[in-house]
Length: 178
Image (cartoon, rainbow, N blue to C red; front, side):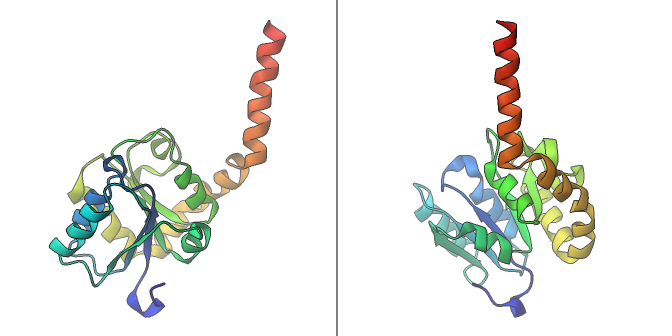
């Protein structure tokens, strides 16, 4: 992993496909000097590696391939970014919130339901993504304060036990109606 002396570390993970928007994140990273770690593999891997080189980001952007230690990588990160073009509900968002990480995300289902508005950017808006990430990295303590209620909600509502209980309640309700 990148050393602490390199500045705050930003992390994201997912399948390397256009829907995940990693190319948008790389474009937004131009001018940001902090390390960015992207874990994942897929059909877009080679194109994204080429984009890292074309944008002269090789000194601070690291595509690390498929990893089995994503929870540990989340814990080591200061910021998580979800630049997706589209999502159903990003489970990775819940993992990041459960790990107590500040998240900047595109306005996709899930993110727009749980994140503070100031941490959501419109899908595909590279300048806004750049600006939001830059602002968060410049004042991580303020971002962490803003996320305290989000993390509390994640601990209370977005646990496996809570989801199982809610699912069971839906089925019980359906059975009693029938």
